[in-house]
Image 1 (cartoon, rainbow, N blue to C red):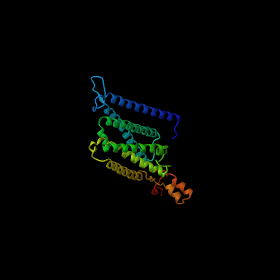
Image 2 (image 1 turned 90 degrees about the vertical axis):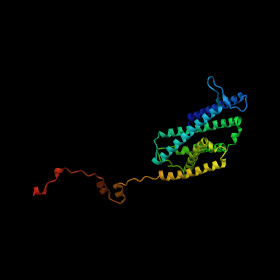
Image 3 (image 1 turned 135 degrees about the vertical axis):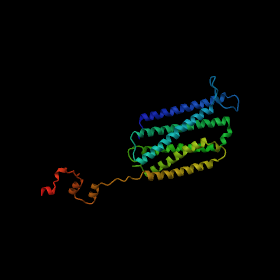
Image 4 (image 1 turned 120 degrees about the horizontal axis):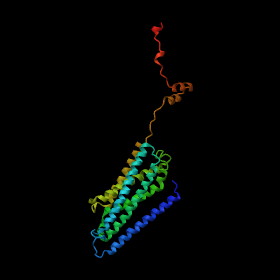
Length: 282
């Protein structure tokens, strides 16, 4: 996939939009923190009456959830499409644009997670510094960091060679190292997204389970998903068994061409009036 000038321009626009949004949220955080005259109170955004002030934490949590929806939903959709591609051997050409578009949606979701996550860390440092000692928080940060590096590897090394022609079998013309990187990266992506989601919703883990234990569970999940992906590849990408025609069998057995033509000629049904009774003729 060669990048055109229009693609480069769109890429620069996306980067500028992300930087502008980051500066806006950072400025909002700084302004709200400076307006907070009473220490210890939640940092809030004043709203016109009769609306109550909105906690800045709520804004960043909302952005965090939106990023999770984009990333987790898009990654799950891509995984299902990959399984379908492995099973059917090819995909309609128009799916390629959707595939690349959803990949960009996942990237946007990951960027939103980082942006909102850093904002949440800043709010925790100002409002409740004790929350920064939560082992689950740092385990989630490390998992998202691995998820980010894994996504960069997929977009740089794997995706261009795999989706260049989706009308063919998935790994036709792809080297074995590239295919192996693709499967391991897919396992890391799937496990990391759902593991980060589980860490976000399971408040029972706060301050109870250590970072090392959580990362060990994540690593076991990645290894298990990699093995499962390898088994699915062997099962879903088995070569199809095509029925052998009589003509091909006859040619392999050395039947002369004249007899092959006779064998391939369809038989016609004779009309019933052509038959004459032997007794009547006698």
